Figure 1 (cartoon, helix red, strand yellow):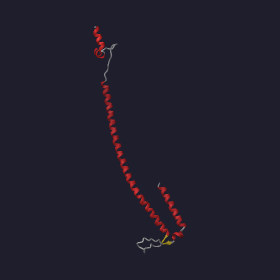
Figure 2 (cartoon, rainbow, N blue to C red):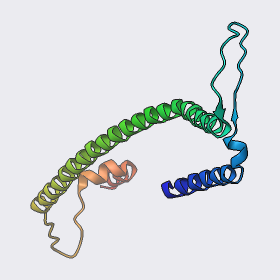
Figure 3 (cartoon, rainbow, N blue to C red):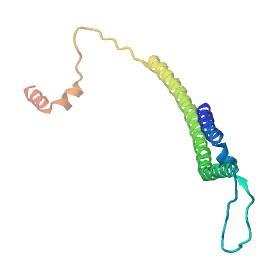
Figure 4 (cartoon, rainbow, N blue to C red):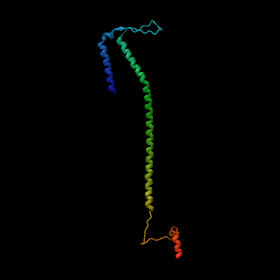
Amino acid sequence: MKKATLIVWVIILGIIALVIFQNQTFFMTHHALRLDLGVVSGVLPPNLPIAVVFIFFFFCGLVIAYLFGLSTRFKARRTIKKLNATITSHKDEVAELQRELNTLKEKETTAVQQATKIQTGTDEIIELTGDRLVENPADQQDANPTKDSKDKKSK
C-alpha cells in the first residue's frame, strides 16, 4: 500500500512539474497579489513569481488536509487501544477458563477411576444352586392377599 501511495504522489508531482515546465513564461512572471481587508489599506505583499504562489497554495492544501485527518487518526488510535485491551482481557479469561477446565477434567478422571475401583471391589457373586426357584412366603402374602385367604380356607 505504501508503494502505491508513493507511485500516486510521484505521478501527481510529475504532472505538476510538466505543467510548470511547459508554461515557464506564465509561471515565472512576477505578479503582486492584493489583499484588501478593509482595516489596513497600505499593506501590499511583495511581487512573487506565480509558480511560488501556486506552490504555496498547494502546500497549504496539504497542511489543511492533514489537519482534517488528524482527529480521525486520534479517534482510530483510541479505538485500537480499547480493542487491544479488550482482546487482552478476553485472552486472559480464555486462559483462566482453560485452566479451570483442565482441573475439572483431572478431577473427573480421578473420580471415574475411583468409581471403577469401588465397583469392582464390592461386586457380589450370586450363586444359584438347584433346579428350581425358592419362593419366599412373605412375598406371597404381600403380593396376593386373596390367594392367601383361599389357601387358609382350604387348609
